Length: 253
Image 1 (tube, one colour):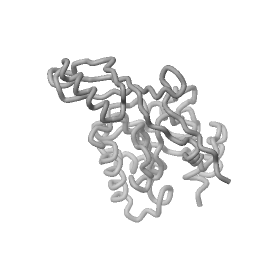
Image 2 (cartoon, rainbow, N blue to C red):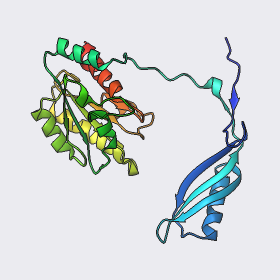
Image 3 (cartoon, rainbow, N blue to C red):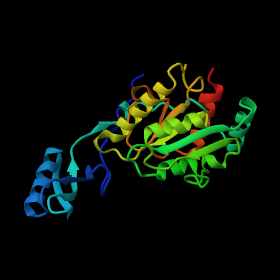
Image 4 (cartoon, rainbow, N blue to C red):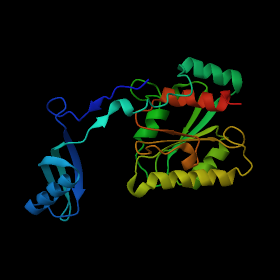
């Protein structure tokens, strides 16, 4: 059966008016000429008409802009497939604890860190710290999970060494800094380091720790492309991570 088209445009002031707001920085000094350059860029992006609603100097040689304008582009929402859902059920803390106790007979060990030069611990703390995120308590709350939070700017070699020393079942890494694809470089470097440390491993839970990364800018990259076992994006809750750990470590043959 053919699905009827569902044509949509952005919403600004009224439905379907096509108005959008974009922000960017140009490597030019603040002033009238810089604003003219911003409007020319906006036109090349398809915004017509466009208006500079905010311009602020970022030092002597850069200017930050917010531009408001109308796009003519249309998309067929009916042609966009539904994203795949979770491949595992979302468990309560009690169910996670019970599964670990029954299957492992010991606490599940998780080592977490921000690696490389990344000093933004908000993401890793939201997953690990007992206070959690959005009312969902972090992994420290789970009686059957032992959490080692190494904090920020942890060298990959130190992360591997600590994971080995703690006999970690899983390693969780948060990457927020993304300039020049630092998050991708750091993640692949970590995967290679764990591969070297566990050359005979048959996979997660079978010789090496489960490798999990999270951050807002991993986009559509698959875990296989990064050399890890799972990638979580923005808005991920501790409960989702805990449920995944049970699924990947305790339920997978």
